[in-house]
Image (cartoon, rainbow, N blue to C red):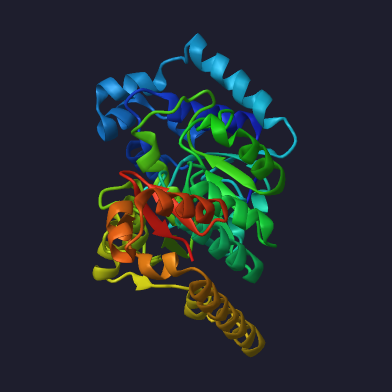
Amino acid sequence: MTIVNRLATGNEIHDWLRLTSIQGVGNETARKLLAVFGLPQRIFAAPFDELSALVGAKLASRILAKPDEEFFTLLEKTQQWASQPQHRILTLADIDYPASLLNIPDPPLFLYVKGRVNLLHEKILAVVGSRHASVQGKKHAHDFSLSLSRAGFCISSGLAAGIDAAAHLGGLSGASSTIAVIGTGADRVYPASNRELAIRIASEGCIVSEYPLGTPPIAANFPRRNRIIAGLAQGVLVVEAAEKSGSLITARMAAEQGRDVFAIPGSILSAQSKGCHVLIKQGASLVDTPQDILDAYAMTSNMQTKQTKQTKQAAQTSQATTLQMHPILENMGFDPVHVDELAQRMALDVAYLVSELFVLELEGRVEILEGSRYRRLI
């Protein structure tokens, strides 16, 4: 499929929106029609016999039927939305349609873009993971994204709670910003708790949706939007993921599209690490520093490598000092541990231990999990 070097006009938006609004015309059927007729206006000008030979008489009749009032209401709403500053509608024929998406098996026909369209053509790395992430997982997502953004990668993710939100914040804090690919209409924010983040991304980064304005959160739409997250990116980093999760869908789509897949390992006892371990077993690259990803793309200099090693050595020294100062952390290890088991290890009173753990939690050195279990964060 070839991009035509033009910007979408009002009439073209009408025709593309009409094509995507017809019941029974999904992406596959639309691409089949476009391959034969070229642009949507030529589809609507085609003889009934030619259309019916391709898609059957019933669907051909729907394609040639005059649009109803509901369509014109949506069209007016769409044109008003597109007339606002920093709002763009990209079709497959638009000069600014991201070339990376043209090569995926199911490219979206229509993209609603809010923010910096140019980011869609930059070096992009997707960072995804669990909505129910641990404190450490969110820190990894933020810190990796910040380092990668500083090094030249725009960070893409899905604006979900947990890992996605942390990745967006890290990307925004770096030089290369972030892209949020959402599963609702571009005029909606889901979850509502990320509203302020979405406003910031629309201002400093970019929000992308393939769904018509007003589309509410529908469960089936979120796995589908994952192909866009993966398709825009050169690679996908999975930070935390359960064994069956949307993040693994994104990783699988990335692998099918020929993208690189990276995964951060975790505790063998953590459910949120099992998905990452599955990916590593299947061939994903294990990473424990942002430099591992930069090395994969040769995006580093000797000076950066030296600084990274120095930073890592300083962190290790800091961790060693902390362990000496806090026997509780040393006895916890890196796997989640029940407070009763930890009390037995250290021959401490449970009540006393809980009070000490509470102090460490306030200092950001441990986190409490379900079932009175604790995990070390350093």
